[in-house]
Amino acid sequence: AAGAGRAASVVAMSTAAIAQVEQNQRAYQKQDNIFVCKKRVVGTKASKKEGRYYKAVGLGIKTPRTAIEGTYVDKKCPWTGTVNIRGKLITGVIKTTKMKNTIIIRKDYLHYIKKYNRFEKRHKNTPVHCSPAFRVKPGDEILAGQCRPISKTVRFNMLKVIRAAAGGDKKSFTGM
Image 1 (cartoon, one colour):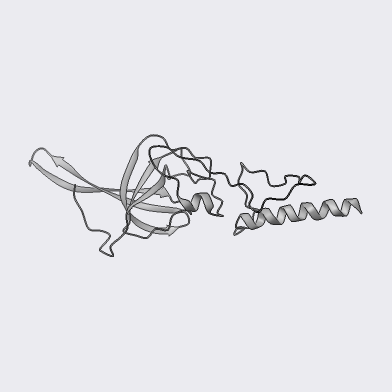
Image 2: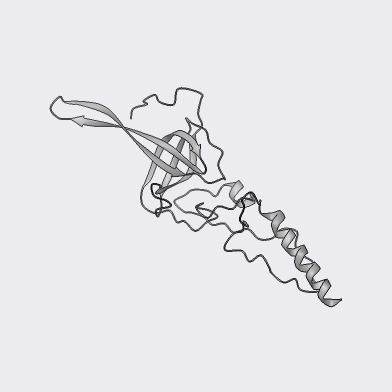
């Protein structure tokens, strides 16, 4: 009888943890830094909300509310995952959002041609990891920070939205 009571409390704890984190994958989703199967001490009240791991990335960038209060699990997120921001900061306009948690940004720049004493327009496309903390669409201007290689091509992580899209043409060249 005592064993059944303990099993019921473990089930209650695990369902409370499941309610905290959204389970939208086939594998069990949990934050690596939070211990899920914590034993409850008899005589103390169970807290309604279990802890959520988040950190500040530094560089004067605020942690989004959705990273603090959200229920998503993303190990590549700079606030709730294991990725640190170091190196370059780049800005660009979002070109596509077709991949899951990855966006392509377009960086426009001018290249000087010495022979003709003029500039030519050039651009680079860079894949950037986009945390579930953000809701973005093509045309938004964003700030991304360099991190360790996340995949074969992704080396940057999205940090904030500088300017939301005004509904204009996303391929237009803005200049410098």
